Image (cartoon, rainbow, N blue to C red; front, side):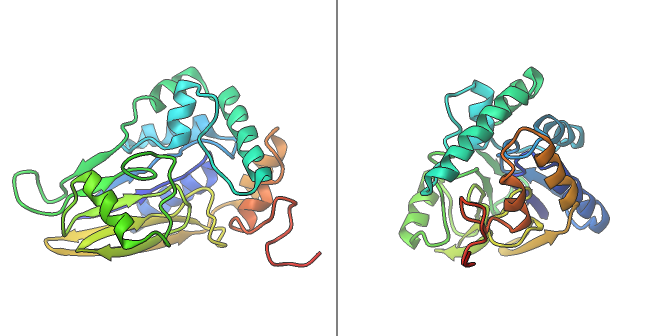
Length: 260
C-alpha cells in the first residue's frame, strides 16, 4: 500500500496542480490524503478547495482551515519575528474576505485527525495516523529538533504502537524519524516550503506488512504564475519572494545570510 500525503498547500494552485499532475504521471500510489492548511498566503483558496473536492482527496483540518471555517479572530499562526506574524494576520484577513461561503462550510467539515488501516481493518497491521500539527493542537509546531520523549508523548496521545506511521505537516519542512518502532513523518509543504527549496514537496509512505518506507518528493511548478498572482492581488508582495527562495528571506525582504 502506497499513500501520497500532501500538506500546507496554502492557496498555491499552480503548486497543487503540479503535484497532482506528477502523481497522475507516476501512477505509483494507491491513495492520496491531505494534511490541512489548504488556504492562506496565495490568491487561490476557493480554487484549491474545489480541485481537492473534484479529485475526491480526503484529509484533516489545518489551523488555517478551521479558523477560516469558524471566522476566528486570527489563524493561530506564531512567529518569532513580529513582522512575519503581522504578515500572517494580513494573509488571514485577506483569506477570510476572499473565501466563499461554500468553501468555508466545506473546510468546517474536515476532521481533526484520520486513522487509516491500509492493509485492512480486519487484520493486524500498521495504522497511518494523520494530523496537521500534532495530536493535541493543530497550531503546535512539531519540528525536527523535538526530543524523542516529545515524540513518545504525541504517540501516546494517538494510541500509536510500533509499526504505525504518524504523519503531519504545519512546519513546512520535511523529515522522518523512528522512535520505538513508530515512524514520525513531516510531509513538508506543497505550496509554501520553508526549507530553502522552492519546489512543491510531498511524501509517499509505503506500507508492506512490517516494512515502512518514506520517500520525499519535490516537483517544479509554474512559480512565475504563482508569484504574479500574489503581486496582482492585494496580498503582501513579500509573499512572492518567500516562494521564490523557499522561505529563506528576512522580514525586510533580504535573503537570509546575505549582506546588504
